[in-house]
Image 1: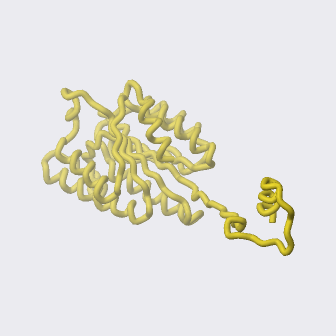
Image 2 (image 1 turned 60 degrees about the horizontal axis):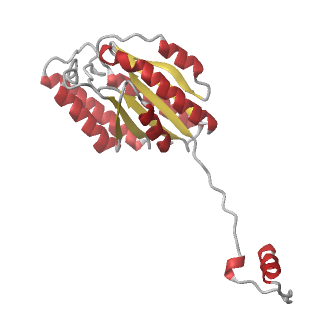
Image 3 (image 1 turned 90 degrees about the vertical axis):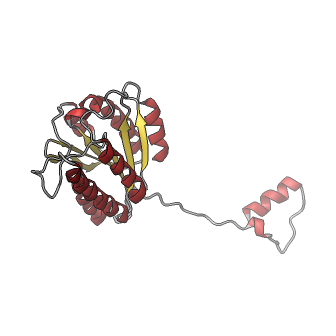
Length: 238
């Protein structure tokens, strides 16, 4: 009726009774539901990644501000030595975790499978609270995984060891995908001279390809000196 009266006044015509409507006068309110995001930052804090921890802190803080505005939750998991640690369970208040992150020191070895296992458990717990959540998993690493989750005493030395770890990560990636997780891999740019330092190139490349194939992951490389472009790209995802 409102639309009909507006058109009548605009066209300076008399109101005719009975009032006749056309299909363009009929409108329906549509309510859009935005499912909440839970952002899981899985951060490699091994010795080879120590120099990018500060840059990742800046990136996380920037995305946290965006997430907080939308009331999304964030979680932080770090992995180094032979274990993965949940620095912060999913929450909208993230400053305490970031303060802990600033004190993290790099250690040898890269137990990525242990970190993704913890991430899966956190996703399960969040889905019990709200089955509509959309998990977004950010894996920040040079992908130099060398510790098996099933055999934590095994430190990869030969190609068969790396193959075992690659297969573990592939299985975990499939599980994350089944849970509806969106995966993003954040890979720091390295110089030609240092890109393979402490990393098995063939295993790292296979891990990356498996993230893409089985987790439909987006892969971003970022400049550790100036990560602003990466921040802009990640905000588009959110």
